[in-house]
Length: 204
Ligand code: DC
Image (cartoon, rainbow, N blue to C red; front, side, top):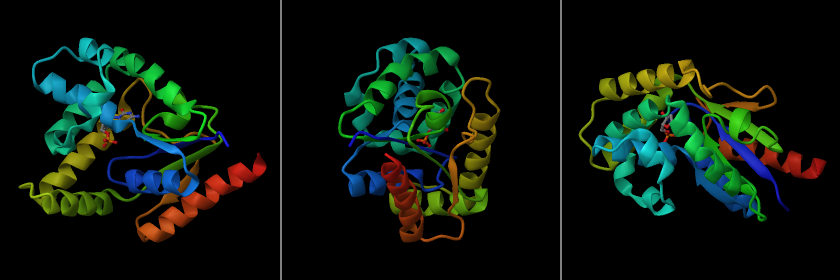
């Protein structure tokens, strides 16, 4: 069954984990749209022009593990403010959403701008402290040299920039179901998300 699931929310709220689990549960394809902005950000850090790079983006550019670093995350958040960068990435995301086998897209503006007609919309959030603690552990486990204070500051800077930009700011769609994962286990958050998508499927 073809169904589009839009999952938005701030950095490190658990969107990625929930999106992968929902996609696996229903057999849908999954696109982490943050990777598009990260790939553009990484190329800009290497000296590229943001809009030119966004227009020439190749799906193979999304595979790079180096896209996961805090420096690239900040660069992604900075290029994401540029309306022409966002416009260059719309088609790729909408084509992905239209896949015959169903699709889960996670990001910041999926339910509001990219797929306003998505059958199921989730807004996954958590307190900044919770998100920073999780992101700190993740980065440390990868062997990156970070401090909890720096990770919290990074999360706050990105939240402020992502929420206050003029084009496609981070805000829940009016019809999104809110999931606050601050006091939830991953299993609980995934079960809640699966139930929301199942309800959309049942509505047909
Ligand atoms: O989801 P992420 O942390 O990988 O995203 C990195 C940055 O990319 C994020 O701070 C803002 C931007 N982004 C966006 O503006 N719109 C999206 N749909 C996804 C990400």
